[in-house]
Image (tube, rainbow, N blue to C red; front, side, top):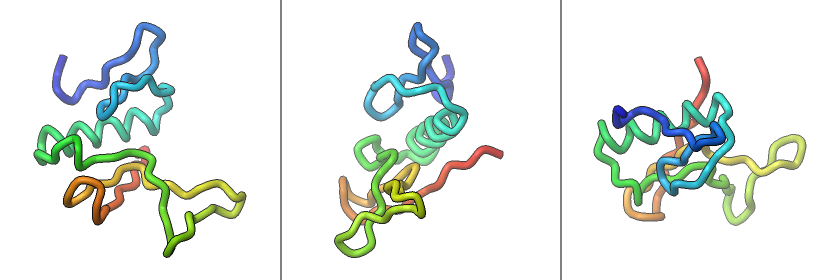
Length: 93
């Protein structure tokens, strides 16, 4: 198995790169997991500086979309563990 390959559970679900949790095998999750692996293995970001599905805040309020659902960043890179985030939005091409 290549470092950038996405492992699947026996049920065909994605084994999350950062936590090892089992995730739904949706196309956007494959893209997200691929980018997390690239950020770690090719750009040398420690796993402890990466996070997925992080809520986005404006001041002290969590942002909501037009339907009232929380807005989340697909991937966040922290400069130091859990400080100053940089968000990345994963999209299918």
